[in-house]
Amino acid sequence: MNNSVGNAARLLWAGLRMLLVMTVVTGVLYPLAVTGIAQGLFPDKANGSIVKADGREVGSELIGQTWNIKGTDTPDPKWFQPRPSHSGYDPLSTGSSQLGASDPTLTKTVGDTKKAVAAFNGVPESEVPKDAVTGSASAVDPHISPAYAKIQVKRVARANGLAEQRVADLVDDHTEGRTAGFLGEPHVNVLKLNLALRDLAGR
Image (tube, rainbow, N blue to C red; front, side):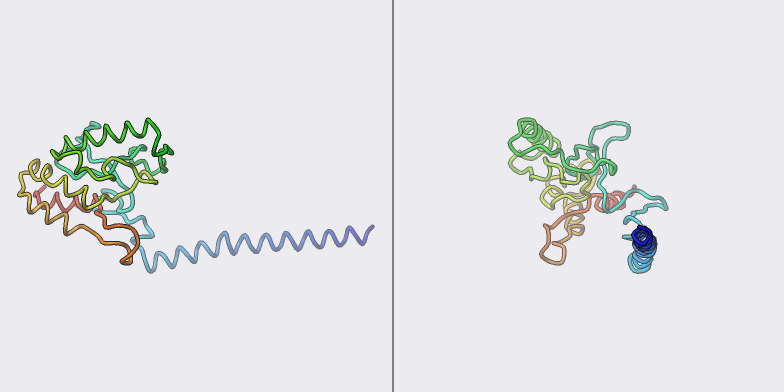
């Protein structure tokens, strides 16, 4: 009996020591090593890819945001608009709406959004791309397709008193290709595009 108790105690002590060692290794040393490497090699990405303008933080390259008329929920015609987000681009509430493609609520929302986007940008509904009327899986996608950016050019140029071609060139300059040449689709970062637009408009 005493021998059994002694063996159990030794096994328990060995297990506790292993728990302590693994806690230190995986819970302290490994995270510190990864953080140190990330800060050393990719400090911008490690800190959230924060974008600054005029000395202040204006957003992140990784998280979309709304571009509404100040104090309202109305999209500002002076800015390129992002794709819809059911969470309002809240980074603390990511995830899709979980509605299926045939869900009546989603179908109606997409139809209404397509009409609104077409009217807002002065284009036929047939020219409105999918990402202009559907949210991303994360609800905080900072990118739009080149097609969606291009249907906004005329409206943005007119609202800012700029030549359409200059705004179109701005879109082309900010169109990024597929990641590593084959992953994903060409895309435009709305925040970076709007900051460049602000500089072009002399704001």
